[in-house]
Length: 516
Image (cartoon, rainbow, N blue to C red; front, top):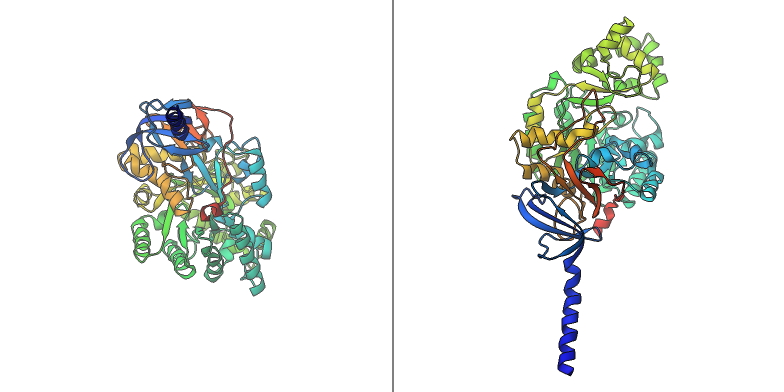
């Protein structure tokens, strides 16, 4: 009898030990799974429990609350977008689902780019955690926001005390979980910071394993030029001892078209020297910014927009400002190459050339009229397809939308990149998945995302590759992409048979959790 009881207890113990591994919240069965490493696809039975990938080889007969048969679709890690402007949308209940990104297969977005920091600061992050977000959210400490808080929009170097205050603010953000420091050295007030200031601030994030992310000081020949701006970024990496990331790498304007191979060579040499230099890229020929940023020289924007118009009206500064604006308009390809994209603006959908004709004034005067009324976002058709293609195939370049209102990149970057790179045969699907998931996670130290492997968060998408196409256009920029059959965020199904489930399963990521 004792022997029978012992055997029975042993069998029960064995069943208890193995039962959890055969019962899942979600089971995804697929013939074509890309795990994020650029390895060839394989078949897998992905068992998910408590928001985590438990196994890629669930046994036959495993039970699940929900089983997804991927059929002819592909299964990939959720894409991670390292450059968005989704902060304000995520903080508002009506738009916090971030559906425009989920419909592209993006399950994690970064905010705070271009030096802007998190709109609303720590309170906004608290609201996101409380109300939920459709995607996960990682965030940068913003140099521009910190500089404005400490010394305003003044065109000068900080005092020693002011620099210490800025360093303290960066340190506080890193302690709170930021992934790194972001600058917008092309924009005001970031443009007023010299290299030494940036090195001093980037040095703060080194102790936290943070990444220095930058909008280059010049992507064209506005000032120091594209090549010198890339060299400055590499210098910051070397002096501060940090990894650096160039946001939306490009050659902007006809004057610098064809420079992509030289930029690639500069970055490759730095990487060969042991520096960690990466970049992101969107696949559009049109950039997106505000009209003032496209045309007005940086020095003239010091202080405020009202102060700019005072300078413009002065005999001392006005003529030089107008000349600079005319030169910048030429760099941007002329008035016909600037399209107003702000949906609620009176000139939405019209080019600057159209506006100038309607007002009966020269283009620069038309631009000043528009900026004085309200400074709208514009699309600027200033990139060469050859340069875009050259940057796209580099192993250190990842996908990033730089999504902004009125530009189709906010709704269609990832499917457009898929069509341009994979459907065209320029890149394998495995390489595309890597550049859009694992490369981002590994670069920015997200220790449990970006890969499909046991122990990682269950962020994954099921894509119909034949239907993964961009639907948004410059004329209809808010049309959702198609092709995402299922999307899981932290193990929760948020897109089910191509329909949003209404669930907000995203998390605000604390980068320091990966240091534990």
